[in-house]
Image (cartoon, rainbow, N blue to C red; front, side):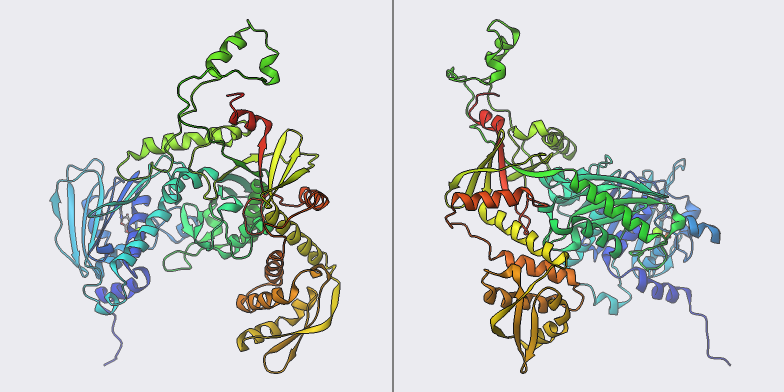
Length: 629
Ligand code: ADP
Ligand code: MG
């Protein structure tokens, strides 16, 4: 007799489950995607013990007939594709007909569902792949799937689960990502004790961002849009100051599916270019819509990765749209003009000098009359931003009022107004402005030995001298390197640096790249490097200390770092040598720095992403002094 047997169905399902269902979060993903495919407008995810004890997903989608409710648990049973041709035009998130069979083979599952038009609902119970007869049950329209005791019959897999907190965090992350992918659906994610996260489901991705990161962050996002061929792009990108230290906050959705795609991610990062320093990554939510024929979602068990047949074109589209959004705004830090909130009772102070516009109005004109009621009005009431996302505040109203402010804050005129408090953590608020065509900063003097005061036309600038010098040095270094215009300058006494053995190897492996940047480095003994030349732009810097750190950096970047990464890292290092706070500057020094700053590619941020200056218009000042309201 032969030895080969066809596996029993349950065993085959369990094996398949290994690919699809790794942990509670994978159940959450599959169930939520089923709910989305069923056209749900509201999806609730409940987690008991981080989902290890139970994951329940309830939706108000189309539901299933009793027959379908039974079929749904069969492997390769799907309502989403019928013939091979359909695979090339998948619009739904699911299509393999695998998830429910897989989940039901390794857990105790209860399905309660009722399709529109059905008299009542049906309950189907499957435990470790064994199905109980269906029972009628009273139920609202839609579907509830309850997955209890995941891996109760596969102890080896159970062992791989982490603590309930960790599993809960992963499930929550799945819900958050799906809710950003589908702002039109209201999501709730909760435990027995509390609501962890919820979204209003009004189709506004900015509202979802607000639920994730706070209203202040959401308001600062820049909108992007673009199209090329069969592909449309829209979404939001963060300003350079919103960048984070990991890539985790960049979200990509293709036809409503959250996916990872390194090439597109790099395209976004290229668009930011020097606006970000090494080690900082942009935040974004990009929505690509394209002909399903161009996508193969069937290359990854959890469909996390997709293959795009026109990836290059898509990357070009993404890069140019993101760059356009970043270029279109001049990011100027504007200080928030905070006036006393207790200025409630009108005090008839005489205004010694009134702004031109008001003074020239005849005393009996309507304008003059209006002035009296308006000029001493109490400060505009501030909205309690950042408090709206708490679970006990009705979220819709809170979001609506909080986000309403962003409309006015975005307008150039609004920049001078009293700003709500939930702005960037650094206490300044960035407003899109045109960069003045003929921008000249005329220094008036130095304040607190840290700031250069300068004026231009009707604006007063307070410039952080250290940040400004860093920016200028950084661009000079990069420019010289990029032009290939590097003059290696021989050191009179070559510099010996002893490095850790692994660092030594890394640095020696990069000798050619370092040489192109002006550093001639030779090995000397087991792990000592001899530096013979430095680029001439490093002249005058305290290069000995800098080089030691810089070479450590190069070593720690690993073999994947590109020459460009190395260049950026070295430039960022060199910036450390910039003039410091508390250095006294002469007027000519300030003039030189200001002149150079106005020509910088990005005069608004230092290489670390902090603002270089704050600007106050004459109008802002007049408002602070209540000369105008
Ligand atoms: P797939 O999603 O790949 O089709 P699944 O095993 O996830 O496979 O689901 C099998 C089928 O069960 C789906 O094709 C769908 O018809 C039905 N189904 C699953 N979940 C739901 C739901 N929440 N609402 C309505 N129908 C559902
Ligand atoms: Mg599915």
